[in-house]
Length: 257
Length: 197
Image (cartoon, rainbow over all chains, first blue to last red; front, side):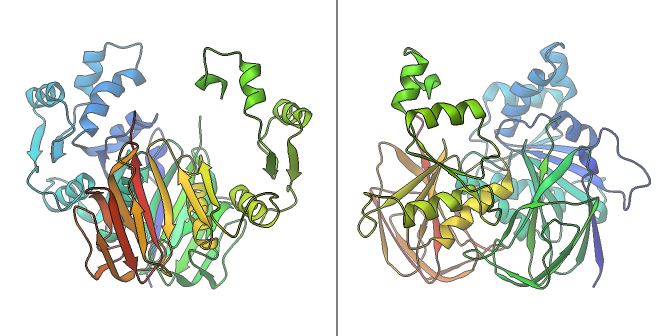
């Protein structure tokens, strides 16, 4: 079984060149309050999309993260490449503003079968030019919190696109899938994340999971909802390994700096 | 609590909203807060030695096993504020509490949504309080795929439909009218939006 490496270098001010496989980042902004590190994610991303009302968030809230600067300058600097979705949340003034700056607007209002995040992931996977898909990592801001059915729908997107690296981010936590097809090495960026973490068998019980590097490691341990799940765990040191018979959700806390 | 009654004196509000019990491992409560409520007669149950269960789990256990004057056999329903949002591993641990205590009615509440378990052992009728909740809702097969779920009263009803993570889950659904029925071969999580009034 192949080894898959994970590292939250997208939370670092600059991405070290020598670190593991180099990834290309795309950013999707959903319609929740921007995390305080949104400008950092924006900087690392080669492609920036807003899902519908996510454009309102960038328009309204990016200037708030740079209170000493002129709001118009900030808005011009943080211009999304694409705005996609069913367009039922984005304000007309916001749409017109970004359209006039050259943002590509993709109106999918006829498609009610998939969530806005799903549409954005599909776009990145199938159509985004100049992005090396084999080393792609999609960062999603605003996927957690708010309406709970939305949060669950966003979580399901991780499972539907299990061949892609997708990271859901809030101010407090980040989460991504550890596919059962691989052994996993997670390199902990201790300056920005941890120590609180968890491994969650969301869709299917796990008959056997094994870890190293946690305060309470699993050792061929069963996990299931209604029984044991690994929450309120702690990372010890800088490397965690995970292998499991099912897709597990990895979550780790983000430090408040 | 005082912030929710800005026109009243903070001390008066605090005395009025005095918890009966404070329970947990006591690593977050401030000393001044602990002393304040202890002096008012709140029962303090220090479980700092027990690191195997979450604070919510400890509280549910307390209510189930020890709470006096609460009629457990009939219609106890435990409402939980603050279970969602924040650290995601905490949120998942709180969700797991619903599954661990599936024989109890437990409702997790945030500003935006409420969620509770629909045990597979029963058919379910959900009476929608349209003045305060809805219309956005979902049915989520957490923990185990569902081979067959059936509903009425939703915009997109399920009809012996399979649901699983990685495939179809019922999110961004809409309640139509005032009654929803659900039956399933697995425990499903029901969630509905709370109206901002």
